[in-house]
Image (cartoon, rainbow, N blue to C red):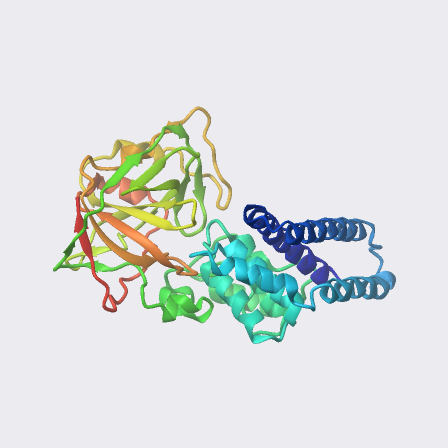
Amino acid sequence: MKKYLRLILEVLLGICLVATATLAYMNYSAKKHLADEVAELTEQLDEAKSALEKSSEEAPPAEEHAAEAGTTNSQELDALKAAFTNGVVLQDMETLYKAQKTLTAERQVGLASLRLLTKGAQDESTISAFQKALEMAEWSNRLQTVCAAQNALAAAGQKVKVLSDCKRSGDKEEPAADKEKAKDEHTKKDDKAHDVHWGYEGDNGPEHWGDNFPVCGKGKKQSPLNIVGPFEKSKETLTVDYKEGPLKMLNNGHTIQVNVEPGSTLTIGKETFDLLQFHFHRPSEEQVEGKNAAMVAHFVHKSKEGKLAVIGVLLNEGKDSAAIKTLWANLPPKELEEFLPPKVMFNPASMLPKELGFYNYEGSLTTPPCTEGVQFYILKTPMDVSKQQLAKFPFKLNARPVQSLNGRKINAGG
């Protein structure tokens, strides 16, 4: 019962987002009659969502009422699907989205949900749409999208490994003996409190990422790279405008990440990107002429259109870093919980060199799901970090090996 109820609510959220986008587009195009239809549909969906939430709150917890509640929810699901079987809304959404150059992971999972309602769970385009949403999702910021896509694929009978963070309370649990066995196997080298879904060693290592995240294994524009010439000259320039703000630290189980308040930007040519966060890898994921630096800091930016750009700052072993000293003095006491040390301010610009000459290439996220289409700008000028500061970093190894160039060009600018 909970399984279907959660899936319906996730689908409704996605559809409401799509319907809102449609209203804006139709108003712009002066297609008032279709906009009215979408508005009416949105109102109906809101009513349906309210009814479902009320039904969930009032659902009798006793086991003897489970069958009756399951029947009711099944009827509601059938009614919802029947409203979309004519395919009109799906066709309208697909037409609108074709005009856009890129789709966000959230819109992609919303479109997949429409296909689920219109064409059913066994339709190949439905399954493909949810799989694409998985590939597009940014792991650190879009776990909800990953969960929605994985749960939908599992409900459709597809063989997909659903992350434990995504499992719903109504899902069937593994037998206790199997759980203990799995725990023993996966925690011999990592005795952490939470399950490790992917990592950097053993069965969870980078060579196995492609088992659960297809792009990691089959992608042709993967990161990181060994940066080696000859280089093509880039006409792009980088302009950084980072602001000081309250320090927000996170140990996400794979790295130390610093979340950044809105207002810090990167401008590439005439395009502006917002700085979302920066994090660290040890050793550096990128190589220059076949050599790794001691660490690298990746600054992750996103444009209004959803494009991603990453600045990489190589950190060589040398003098103490004042910026790193501040960060390491405020490391999070717990994993997976954002830590805001009181009265500590930090400017990400303190992590950057004065010169912003760079090597540029098109790549991917360096962690699952390894989404491609990410522009990397690895700065030519490294920064220092002391041996003692290196030793204080909680992760001894959290770097993905370099990937194949596959015919890509590396540019040099600045």
